[in-house]
Image 1 (cartoon, rainbow, N blue to C red):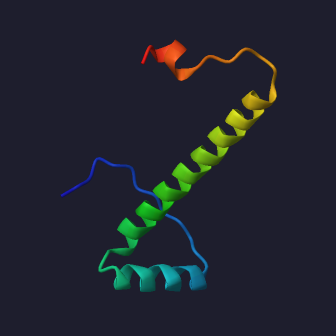
Image 2 (tube, rainbow, N blue to C red; image 1 turned 90 degrees about the vertical axis):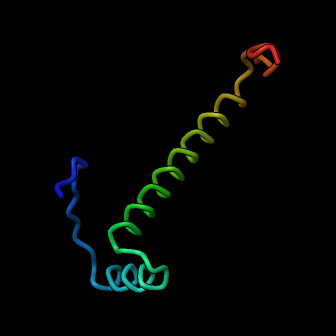
Length: 74
C-alpha cells in the first residue's frame, strides 16, 4: 500500500547507522520509526530552546508585563 506521507532519504555514517540499528533492535522497533521518533524529539528540543531564548530576551527588557490572570482572566 502506497503512503501519502513524504519520504526522506538520508545518508548516515556507518557508526551512526550501527547505533541506530542496535537501538531499534533493543526496542523491537523499525529503524525508520526510531529515526522518525528521534527527529521529532530533536525538533521539539530545538523549538523549546528557541522559545526559552525568546522568553529570556523578553524578560530582560523593561517593557510592561501582563500577568496570566490579566491576559486570560483566570
